[in-house]
Image 1 (cartoon, helix red, strand yellow):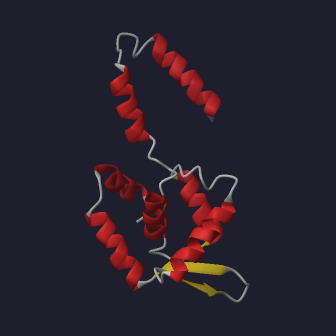
Image 2 (image 1 turned 180 degrees about the horizontal axis):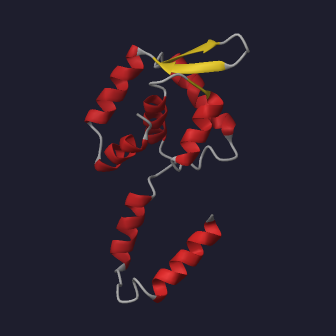
Length: 135
């Protein structure tokens, strides 16, 4: 995928955007808005709670978070399970096991209240992020 993006960028530099130039300040601002601070625990918590409005396994959650650009999860799935455990201790989510031994997570009322409060105080970036979450 990355190779295709490099080819697209090169093609666009030679044609579409040849006349455009951006100051370093504008470039940094655009990158800041495009690439959310994935190391920010608050963003990760919000994303997890939004995704857990429907019951999911940790494996499903890992894939969905990766697809939303949370690189912190990439190659370190244990950090997700640590986060899920913390959210369980805070009683924001609950876990249950099915007959096949899979563990499922789902948001609780307390977690929903916390999520709504965070969304109410959300910046534009968080609102955009919520739009990426499955309905």
